[in-house]
Image 1 (spheres, rainbow, N blue to C red):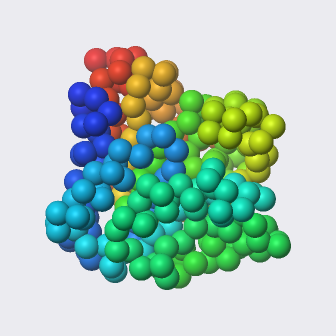
Image 2 (cartoon, rainbow, N blue to C red):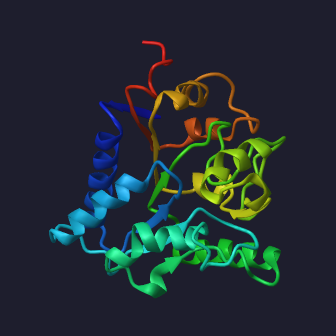
Length: 243
């Protein structure tokens, strides 16, 4: 595992965007795994700027999002479908047919998980996976558990995760209790992984991710087993790392 510590959030976002753009330059039909949440917002803004300046072309890129809430319509502003449209897809030239996000409104969610997993296998493996990390170590929506769940599945969200996300919904009661998420095996099968983290509130999380036991009770710890995983974090998120 590689660790890059940069000055601040803007710098890690810019670095991540440059790495994505460089990867597309090397492979125009890159299969790209994408996250949502607070951390990647600036990275998406940087990618849009790079695209508008003519330095990256997304027309042949294939994208797979990590997750989506169950029973939240896509038109809901808090759906990850809406998030991706607002922050990224509507501003670049990714083809609609190359955009893949789990359907949280599918009639049969288990079948949707199987469909999504098979689609990743058919078009993948994912060349470059971008991740954030939750305070409890979740990546995607893979919550702390007794085992590593390998494939795309339905995940019951912990109260801690729902409380963290309630700021977007206005109240805890409006936060969905379940989500579809890529499994840890699917994530680990990616050729390259970049994890982004920013802020002093993530310092303990990063410390646990890069040291201590590898355990499903802290899902991000499994990333230490990946052959090409890089953490790009800012100085505040690195505060608890032993030098």
